[in-house]
Image (cartoon, rainbow, N blue to C red; front, side):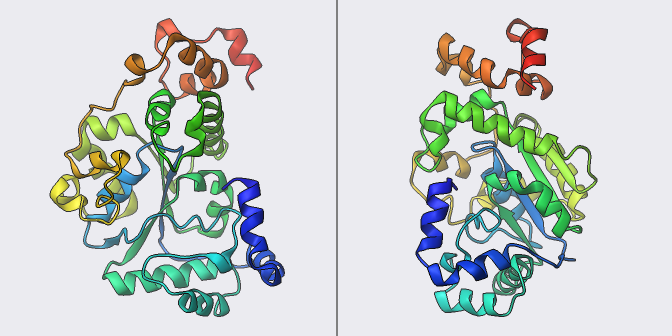
Length: 294
């Protein structure tokens, strides 16, 4: 959430600003086995949420919470919850961590699942906080070739970074580095969109083993994973989510981006593309650029 948008949301409930600040300085940690999915915009986080949500033990109810970004918790809304419901949960919570535990407990009770899947792409920027306060959670970070991510983002009305390749490349780089800074961690699994769409069963089996659940073949069947309010959205960016998983969105940048756009992306995020293995030999940045981009 952009800073100006966050400030505006807080000013809608000025009397609650002190409480907002207090709630976001948690003294507690959650012991719940939550599941978080995040990554740069248009990296496959929604597809991942749907695949996981097709499992009978997991709930993917609703869309994104954005709870751990800087926003007014008193203005928080979510499908199936009234303003009074949210106010009650806030009143019962010492901090944002407890609120999230109580909030997700309500969802799993309503939907029948045992664990809630929280999917907010930008939560990757809050990974250090989440690791600290949710030590028993599992975190699935989605990586995707940023050039393909931009091709998708520029047609998505809810991804403001997609309005320019400079803005998107900079944000993609920021998201990738937010993950890389945390290093290896047994509670984090990095999943490449390209691997997921090339060998879905193999990758989903690995993911389910990581989160401690049995693989269910329905998870990669669009007849099941598309049963979500997200896929009922008629906008172009969501249409593919009701179809079989395939590789058709891989490498689209090679046809859709101009040489100038490719050069711009490489100048901004070439180092990160290279680290993640997305930079082909003929596009690799020179050593001087890699060193200077730290």
